[in-house]
View 1 (cartoon, rainbow, N blue to C red):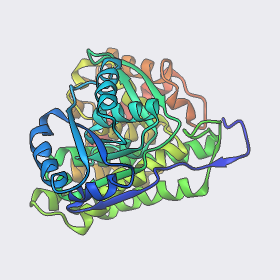
View 2 (cartoon, rainbow, N blue to C red):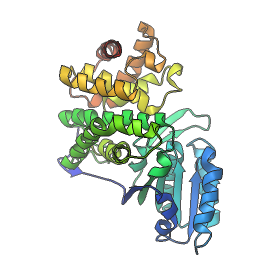
View 3 (spheres, rainbow, N blue to C red):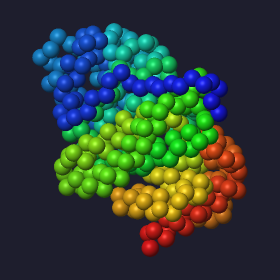
Length: 369
């Protein structure tokens, strides 16, 4: 529940999206100072480092490119923070996927430097948030950290993003699909958003969540088909915005609920670890619809969309056998050990979640038939 009547909304200072925007980085970073420190995903490092040499070589700016070592952990914070400090960085830039970006968020907040976030896929809504998921160096989840400030800029080069695997893009749609339904649940239960201070949701946050859903239905399938055909259409641009900006602002300013709670439960089963965040959240959306006893027309609409774009709609799609033991593990983690589902506007029990998971699996199999 909220603890105040005050409404609040938070977001990055700027969001820029378009083809070729990566090549404008020096123009954006120079406003903060001449020394720029990059942290780049390991598998992208060689190509992007060479590209940065071409961007920064003819200018008065200097840059340091650090290869991300794979985990958002304390050891990496210390290593990258030390290198950035020795370089005398004026601004930090994270380039890559979620763990790379989350690492730079932590360091920027610790040392008080400006931060630019440059994702290389549209696979989650994390880039716009002031949150990081922290792990051990061996990849074991530790905690979520809420930062005091957002990034100065989120830069989406859609030419780069369109070349990422299509599965990542579809996974991003799964994550974004949850935004509206979880926002609605938080609105009904009057739960606090994720800005801190127990604030209520602004109407803007709810409107953004609704728009996110509307764009997915209107453009999601054609965007996927466009990417499979090797082109970045207007529909692709729209869904990149929905997956990243609208979903990110939506979840942070309204809150998560059952769908992300189910995601946490699914991670208890090792067989799900090879699936992306948004793929597990997508099945969580089906579970949330069953838990809330959503109208049949809405279930038809959502499951029709999910099957069309190829999102998981059954436990089997996530390599989970629907045994009582497996379902009980998911339900216990979701209902007892995780707080996200408590944002639902009614009493949550382990049994009610257990039954919702089975109902979701049955509904998904029916729509797949």
